[in-house]
Length: 488
Image (cartoon, rainbow, N blue to C red):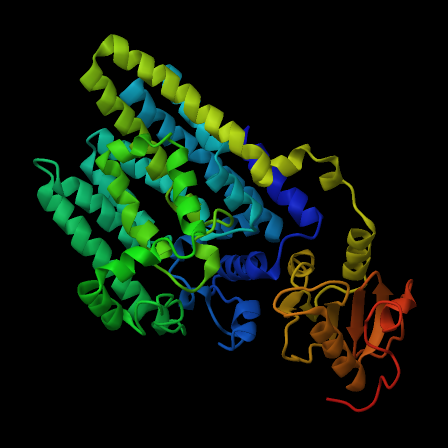
């Protein structure tokens, strides 16, 4: 059931042209390359970020686990495959979390915690924002904690190794898990190995493996407020620790995100050492001063730790029950389990799951109809620069580049001058980009409600259902006068 909910959120957004080249098309191109037994090349990422058209996503993030999705593209080749796979992966984490909770608190609590996870805002927001490698994290973190609870050390090691293939910073999570093991008699050697191994992996992946595949080791350095590099940030931490503490709450939305995360357990996670597993990953995000997406409640980043936080909550309540005794502790467990479901339900109206209850989510307005028509005006098998929100609709049949601030001179361009689109700072620059294309010989093949399809091919104008879109008087879009002047 939860997989259907997540899939519905993703596909409603895809159908309404609210998915993007960044990041759905990036992963679509990468997994398609894997399915053809090549490196995971994402031309859209490589060209837009000036890494070159042969850039592989292994030079962006160390996520070789994406290769396991390649066989799905032999069945259906397109971004929808990734959204379906993500829905199933996110939902699958319910199983190890249920088993973990059943052992600790009983069957009734296990059912309720599973529901709380299914409705939790970190998971829903991950499903809503395209596709990401974070889809693997809830399942694998759930397995890590459940196998540890079951005392299956070999399984724990295998799951930890799989986590290291999800993303370069998963080594921090593995190191956090090692900190927990250091506090358990008989597991300290294993804990030390996890701390060292996880830390070394994160360094090796970010400083060696990612550059080996064409990336830059400092590309995601986000801690300029603490120092220009890791050494400078470490010196700041030693000489001015209060600056580090202050960074955790700057801007204050970071504290809101942390409060919402802990709120998923009604703060019970604070009573368990398992919360240490999530601390290094949370610190990585909350100490940042760049990349604001990292610390807000939206997007997919909180999905990396949500199962850890919930499991810590379960363990924290178990510890409280054991101290209070069976009768009083049993009541605490029942009230807590009901409370975490109530908290999850209470957050639903504020996050993406609420869109499924809005009839407008299923109706195509004029702009969305124009977007569909613009996509249909582009033939299959061509190279096309596409506005961010239109790119996923083309990615399954065309080679897609992001329509951005630098002309790429693809033979086909799908532009949007009706509203601001990533990565432009404003609509006026988007209109200027279209003027540039017209001045270099592109012809308008389609025009409606702010969407333009332009091409250098000599097949004339296919459709101009709303030619006024080319008039600055009507819509602020570039004028068609002077088109055809010059060539590239």
